[in-house]
Image 1 (tube, one colour):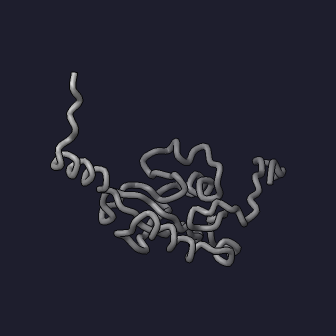
Image 2: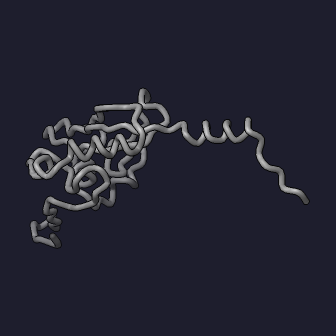
Image 3: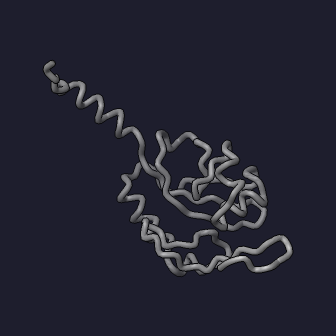
Length: 144
C-alpha cells in the first residue's frame, strides 16, 4: 500500500485549523475583596467568554476548584465562581507575546502585594515568590 502525501491544499487547511487558537492576557477580580489574578489563556475566540477565570479554574467545572491547591483556587471555592469576573487586558497575541506581557505585569513587586493571588513570576518562569500557608479548619498550620 502506497502512502499518499497530503496535498498543499489539505496541508494549508490543517495548519489553519490547528492555529485557530490565540492567546490573551487577562485579569480576574474577586468582586468581594477586590483581589486580582493575572494570567495567560489560550482561546478560540477572545471576544467570547469560555468560562476560564484563571489558574486552571473553569466556572462550569467544579472539579477545577473543589480540591484547591493554589490561593486562587481556594478563593474560588470559598467565594463561589459568581464572585469572580475576568477582563481581557490584551488579545490577539502569540504565545510568546502573551508570556512576555505577563512577565512584565506579574513581577516580584506585583506578587508581593496583598491584593493579588499570583504566587509565581509571570512569563512561565515558574519561580514561586510568595509564601503560601495551608491551615486546617481549626486554624492549625498544615504546611507552608
